[in-house]
Length: 164
Image 1 (cartoon, helix red, strand yellow):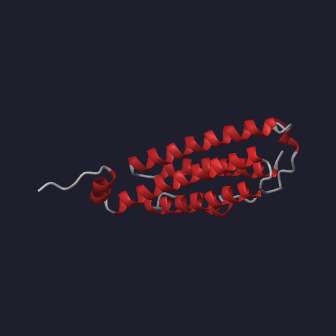
Image 2 (tube, rainbow, N blue to C red):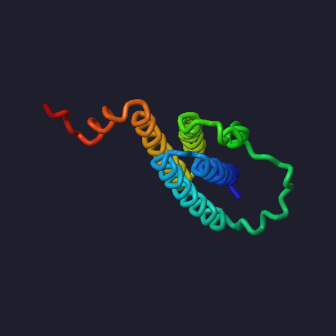
Image 3 (cartoon, rainbow, N blue to C red):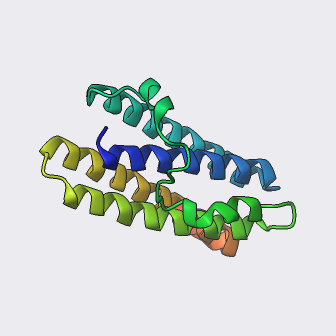
């Protein structure tokens, strides 16, 4: 299997775990829905990458023989402690800041993977994943704006103006 795909699969699995824990821990209903939406996006990415890996002559079922001690470096591994940090005491804002950081790193990671590819198909795949990570960042950033100033966020996001 292409090492870039292997790393991407691990990254998406780590993202699913982090966002699932964040959704479970957050007290804000909007935040919970946002994190669950990100879980679904990461699952979609994972399914795509797993299918792609099977098209590369190696199916994921064959990976059971890989040395389990071999750790892949992913953007989420830096924050493996971060998923534990999304505890009952962690604020929704802290979880949001961690998610923003991960999506920023994810975007850079996939852009670099795209740049490193010789195959145009693989380059397009990683460009698309980078684009989706960038969209995740935008969603999280808008949520941060909402938490910082709900009234102003609503006004600009909904293009409404104060009456009176």
